[in-house]
Image (cartoon, rainbow, N blue to C red; front, top):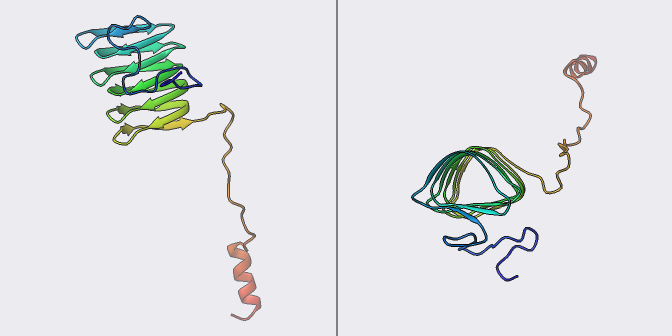
Length: 156
């Protein structure tokens, strides 16, 4: 499986699938614009403009010319173009060097290449378990009232 991610089974090469003319996925070409709600099972490559929402257990790939203004909930995602909106990715989100992402993301795994523009909040939680906030151990320090009383007793 050369060029494919072992865990998510999607192509990790620069020209990852589905490409124009590919038979294993759906392609929204660069001369297309779509508004609405979109669902699919396998893979989707967007090189055109899309506005709305995307829900799928599959992989969405936003090409360099692709522009999304959408709420996205998918299994895997590769972004090379522009995405405005929140994104939830069940497994792996890859932001390639030309990606511009404006919105919050949640993912189990995240790859960010050099050159990416990302404005938003990010939550990466591989185990999908509850995250505990670790607080530093506090040392017993006298309260301000106790300190003043101690100084008065010492004659200060």
